[in-house]
Length: 275
Image (cartoon, rainbow, N blue to C red; front, side):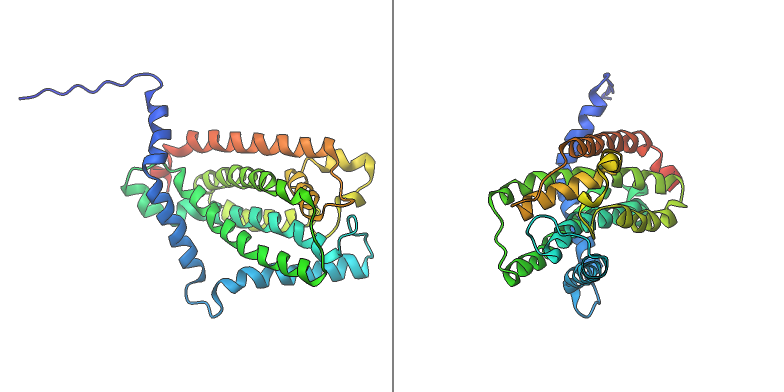
């Protein structure tokens, strides 16, 4: 009879967890692809919803803030392009919060029966929102063609701001995913957070309309820096970034991402029992 010895060394478990993320990458692809298919299953116009929703939102914001309130555009860019440059990161972020918050509950059967790094579930949900983000980019290209607007060299920096948007989406999504498992009330809180966040973020207007004395405080909203970064990269020209506020927002994004991973990992061992 062979005797096998199980040896657990300090620090090995954590290293193994991050290796398992790579080992189970095919599950990540499967969950992301499944969620994309389910989102548009049995819909009449399918992925066109990813175009219709942001387009209508852009029209409403342009009419309300641009035509009625007469708020100034940013730089020389047409108002609809300025609005849509902000809608892209905002809808990515808000969609990720919604998808992540319910991701663990929607996959409860999988969590309670099979071992895999639970971090895969909410992060794969973020990919669904990123697909919408990429599809919505078609509208931005259409607006640029319609207004004969050509971005300058700054557009090459856009991937950097997309990474910041990813970090904000994943960090906040991990917090909400873990909290929703522990406290089911968060299923009702998340839609309010998304709606309230839309009003306090500079989506329908330029952040320049905020008085200078309040801009640093306003930048405590991490999406302010993300949106300003997108506009700076897409609009070019006279568009500027309030650097102090931008670095404050990015710093908060890094904190939310790091703390989100930490809290999720802390709560992960309880998910199977609580869910």
